[in-house]
Amino acid sequence: MTTVRVVVGGAVFDRGRLLAARRSAPPELAGRWELPGGKLEPGETPREALVRELREELGIEVEPLERIAGEWPLRPPYVLQVWTARLLAGEPRPLEDHDELRWLTPDRIGEVDWLEQDRPAVAEAARMLAAQ
Ligand code: 9L3
Ligand code: MG
Image (tube, rainbow, N blue to C red; front, side, top):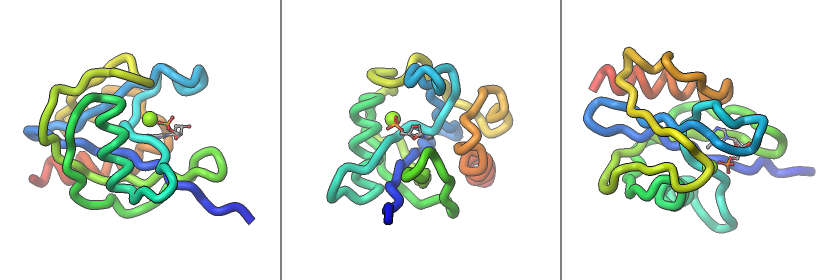
């Protein structure tokens, strides 16, 4: 039996905008946009993993807020879970795995080519942002 393994993505909010990140790797995902994040390490909670991943990948500090309901299958055994998060400090820079970043207002969320698995959470994050 294989246990599912969690990949955590962050819907990072700052001043009414959502952060989108364009992947540079692996080749089959390069050029597609995602909610940045990555795999949990052993013993980590999703919130801890999100804080670590966004520090490593983007050089920012975030406060995870709430989980977006749902779970989306990735390549087995991985599943994607998404948390909203507030930018606490830093200006995001594509330090690893990304080659472009964009802050999107809710009305512009459709302007980038999101990975399919991220789309439901991105739509929900945009709704939450618009209602703030
Ligand atoms: N993935 C999909 N959507 C996301 C994230 C952060 C990750 N928002 C997929 C892409 C990879 C796998 O999960 O196949 C592991 O992600 P990473 O550790 O390479 O960021
Ligand atoms: Mg990652």
